[in-house]
Image (cartoon, rainbow, N blue to C red; front, top):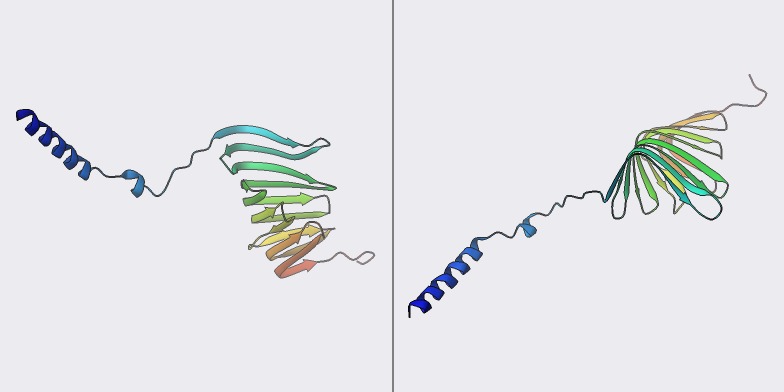
Length: 172
């Protein structure tokens, strides 16, 4: 009889304690993500059987499950006959899309150079675009504006509030 009472008290006190314990997994909605790998002052290459497709240099590189974050980075992208060189303070790469921020300078072999503070480079669609002020130079002609859209394959540039200076051959 004493053992039965003891077991009942033990069981009821265990149930009582369990009812007061919080489930922290339900309340912690914001998860901290930590990089899988960190590199400092690193250079990375993506190579196919014919050439180097990508060259990435960065002061800091953080690799996550499905993205990369680069700080003070320089990226060289090669696709067929087009080579794009990009420098930026911060680059996040996810699913072949580069999200760039801070002192961005882009130059390509089609004659375009571009300066801005925010830019998205979509390698899947071969587009470069932003919603911020930019300055571009194309074949010695200077363009400034907002909301840039540049199609890499067709070499067409669109923008809002655009202003340009065009160099005329033979003119003074």
